[in-house]
Length: 187
Length: 139
Image (tube, rainbow over all chains, first blue to last red; front, side, top):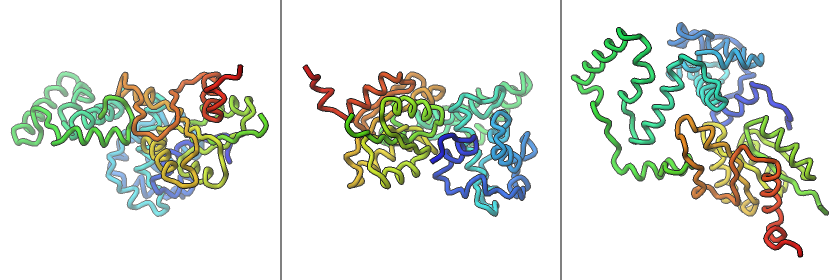
């Protein structure tokens, strides 16, 4: 039994139920990086991030935008020859950075994730305009106008709703949530 | 203490585990540790324990809740006292501010929220290990 845990051990523990073969089985083939559609926007590619975790570069990993940039397309997990499931690693790193309060400033992802979870808890389904405050001011006034015009066009085509709607029998949904997330007031 | 009690800790936070072990072993208890639910359940099945200290938020969510349910459904383990020690509320404060941990759906014997003082932890552990002694103080 280990008495001290490395950073890689901590992340592996968060991934224990994902079916991964373990970060230490990575052969650095870079299939994940080559197949990732979001790699260009990442400051470290998935391959490099795994190497950094295994090397114990905790601060550098947590300061990275890689896991918040992940689009969750699962292409890397499909193609990884060692079944490491890098997309699950990205989720584990998001949870870890929120848990340890190490989310990097100026990133949209953490705020977006919190708004998403709150919206789902409240309505039982997604409501896209509710996430807008997480990113709509990023491009300044010009960006705000651009996003609003885009949102109006989407609304005109009924792709997003003006007001949030809720699932039927919301109380059943909330009771279900309270079974998996035991916090008062959710049910 | 005539026979040293053996406690199991299942928690994914190595800093909390190290501190808790020091407190419990300093008080004369034997401790085993697992850092994820799967290893924890395997360790509980491999050796008899007198008490489980269980974290809630592990893995992909509140998987400690599942561990508690599995234990209560297991013929060999269902009488094992469970002390839930959780930072659930503080960990999720950025998403659900001001919500208290709601223990109705978790099969547990006692619940304490992190951070917990060594004295409070030892008191809860002793109460679960020796319920009669703590319920009726010796005169």
